[in-house]
Image (cartoon, rainbow, N blue to C red; front, side, top):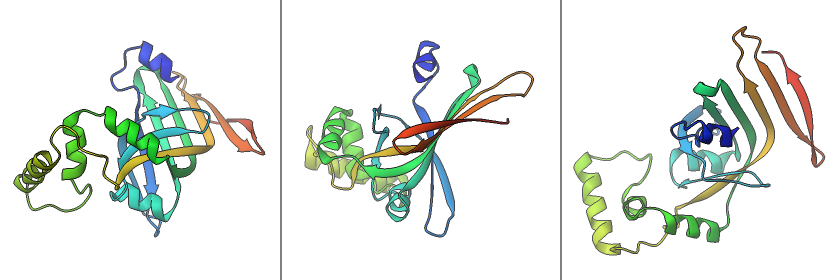
Length: 180
């Protein structure tokens, strides 16, 4: 369905909602961009010290949701989350725009800051320190969600939507149709 969303020229077809939970079970969701998908799972990159990074360190489970309103489609994914290899994070970090790479050094994501000026000062200091070749910070890298459940939802005018859930079982997938 992602390819159909791309063909339909949907803005940010790889935008997804990542949902995590704290150790106390308090949920948190935010929009991120999918950066890769393969036989293992779905990949994104972020600051490991951010709220989402801390929550993933506590409970290595998460959910992703893709929603393409124009196509009346949604995909939900639930699964176990692990960090990608450092080499994968290094390669992706090097491909990012320069200002994004500097920003990864300048921003203590999810932490309180004094002001916008303080953030801009941090950025200027990181830019002066690293120039055109900032290395990947140790606190920044990728995650992959290894799916245990994938649900495809197709909207219908009648509100009798189609829902197919794929559950991973013993190396294969069990398919169930769910009521809307």
